[in-house]
Length: 177
Image 1 (cartoon, rainbow, N blue to C red):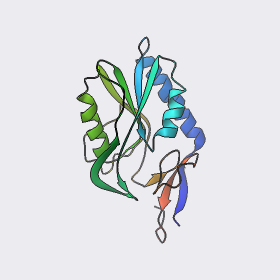
Image 2: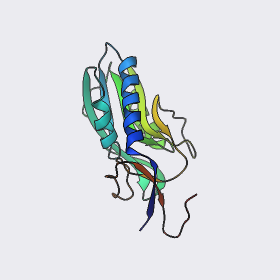
Image 3: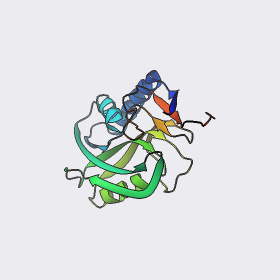
């Protein structure tokens, strides 16, 4: 079984979520947004974030993935698309982590085809090492190093989503850097 080492504490996450909520409330003051959750990894972050928002809010969900175990397959699979009509709306896409950027790039292209008024991305984690698509979130909780991360919704083959902090994974036999 892999070993875990916490890199972001639950308290640090709570502070970041409050900060991000305040930034979004400020930027969208007097307007409403459609907040989109990218499942599965973003559901905990999304839930905490939208409770910080004080502006008129609609929510919807979509599911996309490109990972198998700890490696990106490079192939993006959109498994479930949102139901909301986004035309003319201010859309906030909420993602757990931006890694290669490939998944987010596919999602953004597909969303832009729906003619939103605006489209911004809020990511809890931004891992820039290994980025393959020119994607930079508009709102970022943390810049993170190039480790495989779990917890606070992020998983390894369905495990570790329930960890309150974010941890890096050390595979059996490997050393933590």
